[in-house]
Image (cartoon, rainbow, N blue to C red; front, side, top):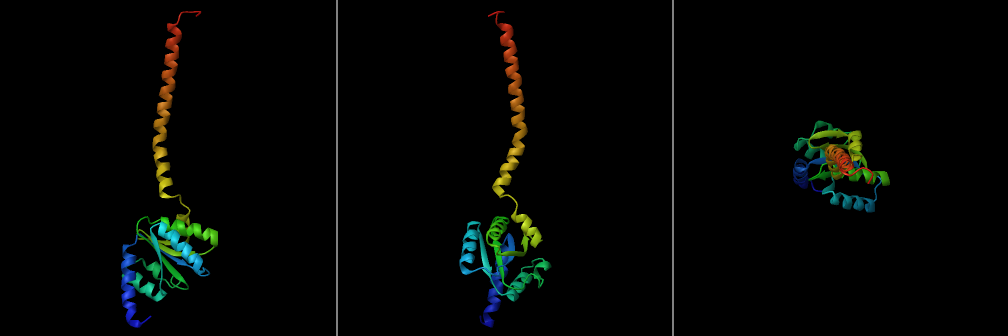
Length: 175
Protein backbone atom coordinates (compact mmCIF):
# COMPACT_ATOMS: atom_id res chain seq x y z
CA UNK A 1 0.00 0.00 0.00
CA UNK A 2 1.35 3.36 -1.00
CA UNK A 3 1.50 6.17 1.53
CA UNK A 4 -0.53 8.33 -0.85
CA UNK A 5 -3.39 5.76 -0.79
CA UNK A 6 -3.83 5.86 2.99
CA UNK A 7 -5.84 9.14 3.22
CA UNK A 8 -8.26 7.83 0.59
CA UNK A 9 -8.71 4.53 2.47
CA UNK A 10 -9.24 6.37 5.76
CA UNK A 11 -11.86 8.63 4.14
CA UNK A 12 -13.72 5.61 2.69
CA UNK A 13 -13.62 3.81 6.05
CA UNK A 14 -14.82 6.96 7.83
CA UNK A 15 -17.79 7.26 5.49
CA UNK A 16 -18.74 3.61 6.00
CA UNK A 17 -18.37 3.87 9.79
CA UNK A 18 -20.56 6.99 9.93
CA UNK A 19 -23.35 5.43 7.88
CA UNK A 20 -23.43 2.09 9.73
CA UNK A 21 -26.12 1.34 12.32
CA UNK A 22 -23.81 -1.10 14.05
CA UNK A 23 -20.03 -1.43 14.01
CA UNK A 24 -18.44 -4.55 15.46
CA UNK A 25 -14.74 -5.16 15.85
CA UNK A 26 -13.79 -8.84 15.85
CA UNK A 27 -10.60 -10.83 16.20
CA UNK A 28 -10.43 -13.27 13.32
CA UNK A 29 -7.14 -14.90 14.31
CA UNK A 30 -7.13 -18.55 13.30
CA UNK A 31 -9.82 -18.25 10.61
CA UNK A 32 -8.84 -19.72 7.28
CA UNK A 33 -9.99 -18.22 3.99
CA UNK A 34 -12.82 -20.74 3.63
CA UNK A 35 -14.22 -19.81 7.05
CA UNK A 36 -13.88 -16.11 6.31
CA UNK A 37 -15.79 -16.54 3.06
CA UNK A 38 -18.52 -18.53 4.84
CA UNK A 39 -18.83 -15.79 7.47
CA UNK A 40 -18.98 -13.09 4.80
CA UNK A 41 -21.81 -14.99 3.04
CA UNK A 42 -23.80 -15.24 6.27
CA UNK A 43 -23.19 -11.56 7.02
CA UNK A 44 -24.34 -10.62 3.52
CA UNK A 45 -27.63 -12.38 4.31
CA UNK A 46 -27.92 -10.12 7.36
CA UNK A 47 -27.34 -7.06 5.16
CA UNK A 48 -23.86 -6.54 6.62
CA UNK A 49 -20.31 -6.47 5.37
CA UNK A 50 -16.94 -7.52 6.80
CA UNK A 51 -13.93 -5.29 6.16
CA UNK A 52 -10.29 -5.84 7.03
CA UNK A 53 -7.88 -2.92 7.30
CA UNK A 54 -4.75 -2.03 9.21
CA UNK A 55 -5.43 -1.13 12.83
CA UNK A 56 -3.78 2.28 12.43
CA UNK A 57 -6.12 3.10 9.54
CA UNK A 58 -9.12 1.83 11.52
CA UNK A 59 -8.09 4.03 14.43
CA UNK A 60 -7.78 7.12 12.22
CA UNK A 61 -11.12 6.43 10.50
CA UNK A 62 -12.85 5.74 13.84
CA UNK A 63 -11.51 8.99 15.28
CA UNK A 64 -12.64 10.93 12.19
CA UNK A 65 -16.07 9.23 12.35
CA UNK A 66 -16.34 10.37 16.00
CA UNK A 67 -16.89 6.88 17.38
CA UNK A 68 -16.79 6.53 21.19
CA UNK A 69 -13.26 6.86 22.58
CA UNK A 70 -13.38 3.33 24.05
CA UNK A 71 -13.17 1.94 20.51
CA UNK A 72 -9.86 3.69 19.96
CA UNK A 73 -8.08 1.82 22.76
CA UNK A 74 -5.00 -0.19 21.84
CA UNK A 75 -6.51 -3.26 23.53
CA UNK A 76 -9.27 -3.31 20.91
CA UNK A 77 -7.30 -2.24 17.84
CA UNK A 78 -4.49 -4.76 18.05
CA UNK A 79 -3.90 -8.10 16.36
CA UNK A 80 -6.02 -9.27 13.47
CA UNK A 81 -9.03 -6.99 13.48
CA UNK A 82 -12.00 -7.05 11.14
CA UNK A 83 -14.91 -4.62 11.18
CA UNK A 84 -18.49 -5.77 10.64
CA UNK A 85 -20.78 -2.98 9.44
CA UNK A 86 -24.58 -3.28 9.50
CA UNK A 87 -26.61 -1.02 7.28
CA UNK A 88 -30.15 -1.96 8.41
CA UNK A 89 -30.68 -4.19 11.43
CA UNK A 90 -27.98 -3.39 14.00
CA UNK A 91 -28.42 -6.68 15.89
CA UNK A 92 -28.53 -9.18 13.00
CA UNK A 93 -24.77 -9.27 12.30
CA UNK A 94 -24.01 -9.63 16.01
CA UNK A 95 -26.26 -12.68 16.12
CA UNK A 96 -24.61 -14.10 12.98
CA UNK A 97 -21.15 -13.67 14.51
CA UNK A 98 -22.32 -15.21 17.80
CA UNK A 99 -23.74 -18.30 16.06
CA UNK A 100 -20.70 -18.64 13.82
CA UNK A 101 -18.38 -18.30 16.80
CA UNK A 102 -20.28 -21.01 18.69
CA UNK A 103 -19.74 -23.46 15.84
CA UNK A 104 -16.11 -22.66 14.99
CA UNK A 105 -14.74 -20.85 18.10
CA UNK A 106 -13.69 -18.02 15.76
CA UNK A 107 -14.12 -15.09 15.38
CA UNK A 108 -14.14 -13.48 18.81
CA UNK A 109 -15.85 -10.21 19.68
CA UNK A 110 -13.58 -7.32 20.68
CA UNK A 111 -16.03 -4.42 21.02
CA UNK A 112 -18.65 -2.55 19.05
CA UNK A 113 -20.88 0.44 18.65
CA UNK A 114 -24.59 -0.34 18.35
CA UNK A 115 -26.69 2.64 17.32
CA UNK A 116 -24.09 5.02 18.74
CA UNK A 117 -23.64 3.22 22.08
CA UNK A 118 -20.34 1.52 22.92
CA UNK A 119 -20.61 -2.20 23.70
CA UNK A 120 -17.78 -4.22 25.19
CA UNK A 121 -17.17 -7.89 24.44
CA UNK A 122 -19.61 -9.08 27.12
CA UNK A 123 -22.32 -6.71 25.89
CA UNK A 124 -21.97 -8.02 22.34
CA UNK A 125 -22.12 -11.63 23.54
CA UNK A 126 -25.33 -10.84 25.45
CA UNK A 127 -26.84 -9.17 22.36
CA UNK A 128 -25.85 -12.18 20.21
CA UNK A 129 -27.98 -14.44 22.42
CA UNK A 130 -31.15 -12.38 22.03
CA UNK A 131 -33.94 -13.85 19.90
CA UNK A 132 -34.32 -12.44 16.40
CA UNK A 133 -36.45 -9.35 15.75
CA UNK A 134 -39.22 -11.45 14.21
CA UNK A 135 -39.40 -13.70 17.29
CA UNK A 136 -39.49 -10.70 19.64
CA UNK A 137 -42.29 -9.09 17.59
CA UNK A 138 -44.23 -12.37 17.66
CA UNK A 139 -43.81 -12.67 21.43
CA UNK A 140 -44.95 -9.07 21.94
CA UNK A 141 -48.05 -9.54 19.76
CA UNK A 142 -48.82 -12.77 21.60
CA UNK A 143 -48.52 -11.05 24.98
CA UNK A 144 -50.79 -8.22 23.84
CA UNK A 145 -53.38 -10.56 22.30
CA UNK A 146 -53.44 -13.08 25.17
CA UNK A 147 -55.77 -11.12 27.49
CA UNK A 148 -58.24 -10.58 24.63
CA UNK A 149 -58.33 -14.32 23.89
CA UNK A 150 -58.90 -15.06 27.58
CA UNK A 151 -61.78 -12.54 27.72
CA UNK A 152 -63.40 -14.02 24.60
CA UNK A 153 -63.00 -17.53 25.98
CA UNK A 154 -64.59 -16.57 29.31
CA UNK A 155 -67.47 -14.77 27.58
CA UNK A 156 -68.10 -17.75 25.29
CA UNK A 157 -68.17 -20.06 28.34
CA UNK A 158 -70.68 -17.80 30.12
CA UNK A 159 -72.87 -17.59 27.02
CA UNK A 160 -72.82 -21.40 26.65
CA UNK A 161 -73.89 -21.77 30.31
CA UNK A 162 -76.73 -19.29 29.74
CA UNK A 163 -77.89 -21.15 26.62
CA UNK A 164 -77.77 -24.44 28.51
CA UNK A 165 -79.81 -23.01 31.40
CA UNK A 166 -82.40 -21.50 29.05
CA UNK A 167 -82.62 -24.75 27.11
CA UNK A 168 -83.14 -26.75 30.31
CA UNK A 169 -85.89 -24.40 31.52
CA UNK A 170 -87.59 -24.27 28.11
CA UNK A 171 -87.81 -28.01 27.59
CA UNK A 172 -90.72 -29.86 29.19
CA UNK A 173 -89.83 -31.85 32.30
CA UNK A 174 -89.14 -35.50 31.71
CA UNK A 175 -88.55 -35.22 28.01
